[in-house]
Image (cartoon, rainbow, N blue to C red):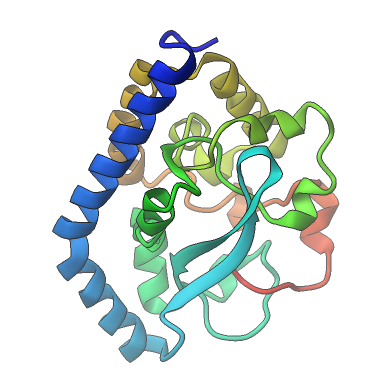
Length: 212
């Protein structure tokens, strides 16, 4: 259970989300505009990638990212084979996630929480895996500061469920502090041997879907 339980924690979390997201959007707007131009020059339109994701208690929403892959359909398990030149830089430093600050302002995401996944994955969740949906999805999270894509799915689920059980203001703050350190290290940009595994290991062999 959260250390700050009930409405007090959730109100404080929402206040932190809105305050920091608004501040970051204002400060980073020139950077985001510059990145948009670089994407356009490097690989053309579209600049943004949009995809339906599943959030708190199973609600769907449209997630925004900077596009990092070449236009077209690719195998999502091997993004490193299709990443643009600018996209490699964006993924390395997590800059492709910056547009999700808008999702945070809209209340669809939080700065900290389990990463949101696609409907096809959620449809196959076990009861244990569905516990990830008991918190707002986040820009970063407990799993992201413990390996990002280098984690196996069981490891990600374990970290996310642990977060749901223990989430509190100080844990959120520690994750926010640790996230830049993880990004600088470069760990977990892609999964083991360059592959980003889906919910099940065999999903990496599934037909190509829309890139993320």
